[in-house]
Length: 464
Image 1 (cartoon, rainbow, N blue to C red):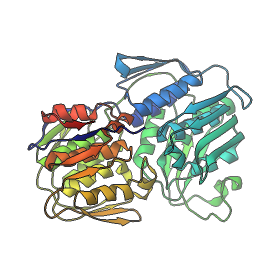
Image 2 (cartoon, rainbow, N blue to C red):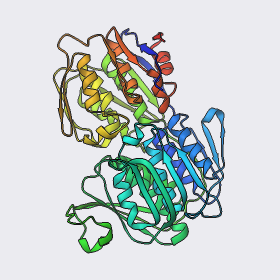
Image 3 (tube, rainbow, N blue to C red):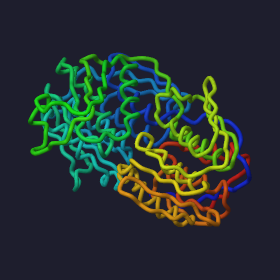
Image 4 (spheres, one colour):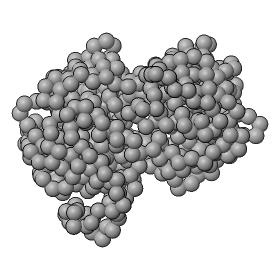
């Protein structure tokens, strides 16, 4: 149930300071999966404590992975994989995955590779989010049965598996890079049974390539051997005909080769969340302040540090420290930018666009319609309440900032954590911006509003 409360962030001049956001959700859930199926124990430090990571932890515990939590959730100790592989006739496990896209997509691939009898269920919105492309990729290699039960290829997902066969995999990449990431991380799990390497072919556009490269780097840290090859096309005779939809002439754009190395238990430190950092960098940009985010540099594993370059294009200064990135706000101007690689920061950019001179055109994010909410259509509705003129496009939107400043408005968050956090930025520069259901930030950043309050040095106004 949605939180009935609302919050108003109070404007008050330039925002200055420094902050270290909590650990990356993307890295925490990837590391949890690799550690869960590793040979030997692992310890993850700097982990994110949030709904999405708690959902992953609980699901792994239910399938027999021992996980100890300490230091308020910042340290996770995993015992490694269960010694006896399961089959499709083993005990049935019903796993609740809430609205966590990483959890459902990563576990669907991993559990189908490991073997067993599972059903993954979530909240109503999760049962509207697509997973059909991943299921389609898994069916030809599945020893057993796998199916998406909701209309239009959405969860719940039913898995009755004896693992994978040894064929190559073919997957579409235009809806979510998490499908490919899930298959990549599952390949070493499948190798426990098959002892064979794996080839994964991506057909058509692949969105959010930085997340795929992040997945590969996490796998390597846990002992995986993987190579990502970007290509214009792969000859048809390299693709198993059973894995290619009839009459599908779509070119293969990425080929991934995963060796049969098993995961090994390790000590693993998790970076601060770069997507969460984007809100603080944006706060500096729109108030002409100065914010330093500690723990992130341009060389971070997370592609969303690229948001700083977008702010530079809009007029900000970017300073790089030994272990930090600083944004210094300057007068802003609109830009035309492809956000495909950093699509989780589109809502953040939309708030910056409201404070810029001239329109901002966002491209390459058609897949944002399939996130926790429609992050194009629903975002456009709320931006118009603030006075912006918004034109939706097939792959994004154009935002014309209000000529007379941001208007007072009551903003819906659609139970989407990124809506709530990005809308808080409008309150830094305009009176009367009320954000409904701010508690939805629990999904990835439970302390967001408290951390923002400390940073700006004044209290928010809460209503219950």
